[in-house]
Length: 77
Image (tube, helix red, strand yellow):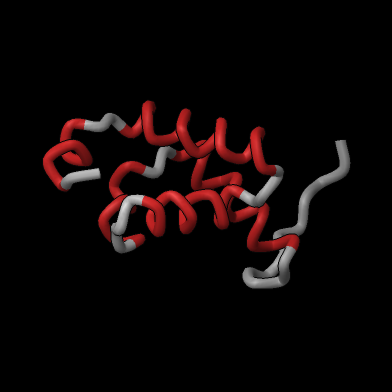
């Protein structure tokens, strides 16, 4: 993907592509973003502005499960 195409891609479309990749492959959202970057020869910093809040939250949950981020206490429902 060329840089010009990335500039016109919306955050919503990027998130949709990542979600579809996760559904297809079963990898974490974090890995899906990195794979997307690898396939399109992009640095992860390049797509940072395209990560929506819901996608960021899913990446944080993945990172907590892998003990890459401290777990946040949650109140029982």
